[in-house]
Structure formats: structure tokens, C-alpha cells
Length: 398
Image (tube, rainbow, N blue to C red; front, side):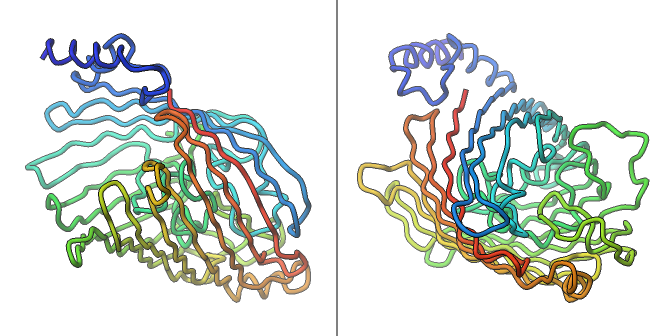
């Protein structure tokens, strides 16, 4: 083992800094040594420059960024501990876009607006019998969201909250909260996950004395791998139910809900049923092309979104001599609930929201990725014209 690490270290030292997978390199072999003992540390800096160039609530550009620190320990006899700390700084265009969906989903965390730092994940897992995973701790919803050709927290692919994850969950599922549960799975086969979580968001505070003070959130999902013609794909079916009390105008980490603060009836509980899908349709060597979709239906009383659908196309290595670049285009439609439309019919008349997002992510080096992103969104608020949002994203992996 020592000889293998030494060989890897010597090889890393022969590479130039532009060939390193991470900007700080292998730490003279220490990184590999730590990994051999189940310690994996990653730090990413992602910077955004994004602007509303037409339509929306107002026009302007904003600069901001995120620092993400990941510490993964294990597995040690099946036990693992996952930690995610986030620091947000600067500004974003989520408020001035005038859209219901967030044009820069990741800049809403750990808390929207201004500088903030929080431990958004501190999750322990224990693998038993090779088919059962026990889960407990502080759970980061986006970290655990898996869907090929999108996802990845808005840091490397799409950026809009209606495309990064399934927005039907925006009412019931907090970004960062405490919970426990289990996953039963067959390697390469079906996977069923069930979680009981606190329905309140706790991204920057411990709040251990307030756990489940406002009810409980139950979530279950079934993931089914499919492989037509030998091409990888997945179908995911899920359901959420929360016992917490809400109004349809309550704030959400996933959305810009209009009319916050206006009187609205309080509803007991909220539910959502959802479906996610991805499918590779073509692959050759280091090139691939695939499709993805997300859809859902909710109660339409406490949830401001009654139904939604997102469809997209993603690819990797499609540009000659650019094998590690990715790109994608997606369309989304948010069917706002009749309750929200009724409540805001006089103050802020609402309609369904729909939009298109395109991105191209270029790998400059293994540790530097530069993305261009364009979104065209017809806002849910009728008084706002179609918003055109353009931006650039630079991600550095340390």
C-alpha cells in the first residue's frame, strides 16, 4: 500500500498544476493517505455574475458566490459521516427577476440575502447486510438529490430552481433539517427510501430544542433503474406529507412566492406526489446525450404550486476536442394553485409560469469550470414582462 501511495504521489508531482484534478494538488501525498484511511476533504468556490437584461421586476446585474466545504468520513465497518458547510456572500438576481422560480437556486442557501455560514449537512449512515442503510442527522435535500443531466445543486449544470430539482417539493421539504430513516436497495437494482424529518428549515442554527415543534414530514421514494437497449436510465416515484400548518403565501426556500405578508387562510398539512426520470439515449466513448423530466401534483391549498413539469436535454463531450464539457437545455411549466390566484387576484394577479434555460459548462482545467447560462422566463406575476436572465459561473475545486 505504501508503495502504491508513493507511486501516485510521484505521478502527481510530475503533472503541471493545469493537469491537477484539484487546485491544491495532492498535498505531497497526504490527500491519498487520508483517503486510504476514510477521510475525504473537498473545498469548492463558485462565483456568479448574473443579470436581468429585459423584463422582470427590474433590471441589473449582481455578483455573489458560495464556498462549500465537504468532509466525508468512512466507510468504517459500514459507518459513514457526511458534513457540508456552506458560506454565502454577495448578491443575486432572485429578488429582481420577478419570477416565481429562482434563477440562481444555489444562492438561496444557506440563507438568502447577505453573507451567512451554516452547517447544512451532518449525516450519519450505517450499512447493514449490504442491502439496508440506516440514516440519521442533519440532511441537506439538494446534496441527496440524484438525477442525471441536471441536479448537482446548481453549481455545475442548470441554475434555475424549477430545473435543478423537482419544485413541487418546495412547500413541504426544507433545504436543511433533521431526520432519520432507512434505504433498502439491491446493488444495481431498485431502491426504496423512507425518511421522517422536521418540517422546519435549520440551515444555520442547531435548534435542537425545537425539533418537531411544528409537526413532522414523511417522505418516501422508489428508484427503479432501467436500461433499454443497454442505455442507463432511472425512474423515481415519490410522495411527501407534512403535518405542519401553512398558508399558501408562506415563504419557501425553493421559490419567490408573491404576496408574502398578505392575509391567507391557514391550512393543516400538505402533500405532494412526484416523478423524476432520466435516460441516456446515445453514448459513444466519452460522449453522451440524454433526456430528463420532473413532474408532480400537490394539494393546491397550502402548496402554491398545484402541478409542475420540467423536461430537458443534456449532453457531455459533444463538442469536438472538448470531452469534459457539458451542456443542456430545459423547459419548465409551473401550474400555480387556484388558491394563490384567488388570494392575489386584486393585489398581484397571477398566472402559470413557464421558462426555458440553456447552459454550457466548459472545463478549463480539472479544477476550473466556467459556465454560461441564459434563462427566458414568463413570470407568474402578470404585471411583469418576460424576463431575460444571463449569467456566468466560475467554479474552482481546491
